[in-house]
Length: 389
Image 1: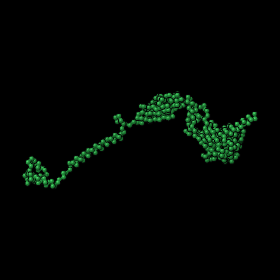
Image 2: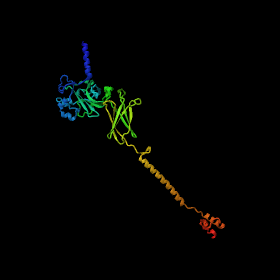
Image 3: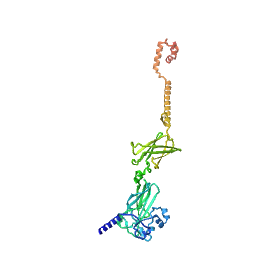
Image 4: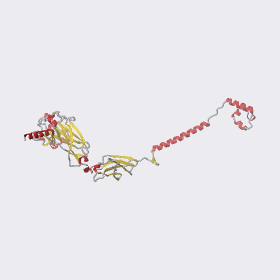
């Protein structure tokens, strides 16, 4: 019996050494060191009573609160020593009845350096997409000197609930007290909450599932839309798409061929008005399904010539090139004709003398008319044409 009691007592001490969850007690109990106030959560209402609502609303609910006003009005030395940032921060997901939100508990270990000056912890959770912010304050009893063995304990926060599914959050843990310049005295970690499928299972999330990937590509007058399909385990086999612009709505049902591609599918939208902006939605063909919104701008097609489409500047270039070619050919022909008409014969004086001597010896030619002989230059120079000496 005595051995059993001793073993149970050792197990209790080991459990207390390994993990510590905050208790329910007041700030007054923490200050006075009453029983059951070893390590407690402090509500925001109590902080407002001590510091004043104006202080917290001005500086923010997660601004490190002044140690002197909370703990050390009688012993200011308590707030003059600082403890390095905690480490080994972990996020634990806990069950929640709300299918549309998640819940987590944060755990950490304190630094062993200067742990005897440790007065508590402050834990904050910040959404990276929205302005959501939550903060928890945990304090040790004022008269407690934290032993070195407490550095091996795992401390836990209260449950942070109502977190958006599939969202990113940043958790920050700091040891108290911290100096006014406290940037080096905290540790942060970024994590993502679970999706609906991860949290509640696929059958419960048909209505909450929607395509997260949507890509749009235009080919002439046709718009091609590509989106990701639901996991086969969800049993979603059909989808629908609705597009609206200029007061007109276009809708169609989509039944993918999963034998070709089990993860993605594309479909064509035709007869859309060129130069128009369309607001579209796509979703699983389920009751109250979440819809994914996206936009489509239908570009205007370029002007066509016959069966083929040419840009305007290409036509201009063709006409200019043809005109320049015709002009160059015409100019070349004209220049050649002028050169041929103005070219003078080269006269050799020796040939002229020989021809004149020959004409004088032979006399006028009977087979050549006199007027023709007169017109010839060589006969005129000799002056012996038609009997004239």
